[in-house]
Length: 291
Ligand SMILES: [Zn+2]
Image: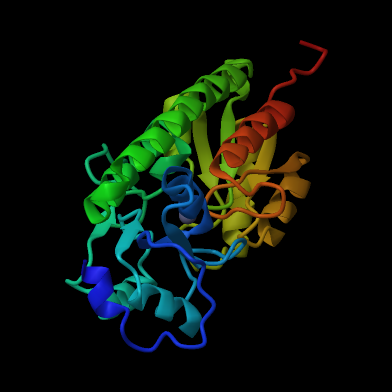
């Protein structure tokens, strides 16, 4: 209804898929994937941050601003994760369409140096299940005629996520407890650690956009050695130079974990969690034969 009123202006020359459903805007491709699983063919989902970019520092380009202006629904994570996008969202849809935080209602863990709480809730699959339920309900709110379709799509995907949660739990449980230690690029893994039983030892970048210092590298090297951390984990959207130096000094392997950004073959949320679980097992799992 509202959509019909606002699409009257300025859309000529644009190639649009022929669909009548709502236009949904979200922040990252990771969430676009979760939402598309529910939207199916009925709604069009656009992410403002391109795959591989760091959402904590990304500034949206004009074509994405246009997408926001045409949105019928905006689904964000909340907790400051969309800090660089909020002006564009507020200025273009403020008060006109629902802007819904998918993390709302979930228990939040403290972030070391941010006032808002740590935003990376989706790395616990139980929380991603909540996001999908919020997305389903929001889609039904803006497009009530699609209720049966959204409901059926969500039911199927939620069952897949239930399985995924069990798979990740089982994989990580196979790692000896004393080796389940996490050193990562940025502070994205407290929810994963809490849910699946890992210990957070340290991060290289304290807060988004902050350059790590040489002193921090030296501290990290000491920490890796003192806590017998078997491997460290870089993230594709964050520079790994400093971590690689620390790992070399400490004599441990640099592995990878996905957190905020999809990239290459890791192009869905399910693949992201499967990749992370198997990488954790590969890099932390084996005990030295001498024990
Ligand atoms: Zn992050």
